[in-house]
Length: 303
Image (tube, rainbow, N blue to C red):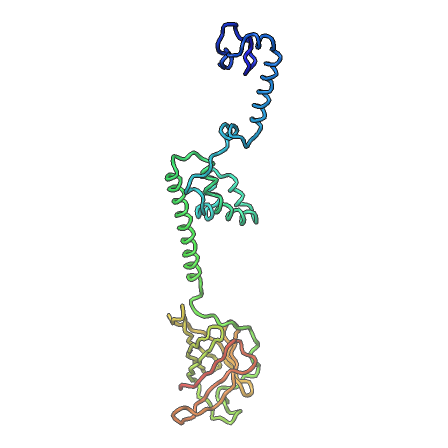
């Protein structure tokens, strides 16, 4: 007698199959007389079982496969820690693909991929006690990432402000001083103006079109063709002091040029204007050429 389920030969008085445990309720004469049919049934059953094993959509395959379970709620989402700390975060969380972030060009794209997929990869790459523990760790990474990013921005802003020049630098080019020197007593005589007393003090007002600001300096023309100019020092649009610029001044025909020690110069023409109180005042206005200052300026005689 043979088992009709698995085809194993059974003892004549057995009620159950010793191999598969199926009930042996088939009459002995049937099982003894047709062992070939029993074997055929066994082979058919084996073929069906093999087909089910290869079918990945069958419930049997899904229940016995080693596929990872779906992500729990609260795992997926944007990761600031992975985005801002990329390769450091990747090493700590064993997300080795994140090391691509150190490669030029590829890294720029990879940091955004880490921001989107980082939490999911970190959950699958390590054993976590719970979802809450995972979220606490990732929150700490995000806090560190945002904190270091803000710290870097603030430090860069402070460094930029600290390295700015303390006083405005007037961009001037070196220009040859007019070669014809005239004694100070001849100052103004070429234009029919009364001679200019030397030494004399002038108030010079500079207007810079780049900053839309006006600054005032004090110019002292000395006898012998030397000068000194007290120039204000600014920091963040506030005057914080001044410095002295020295050089030489000369007359050339109807104009005056004073040249600093660094070779920069200002070149202007002498005029006489009426003051608000009705008196005549001496002024020097910037010439249209031969001047290093990019903006406009005007000097007024004080004494």
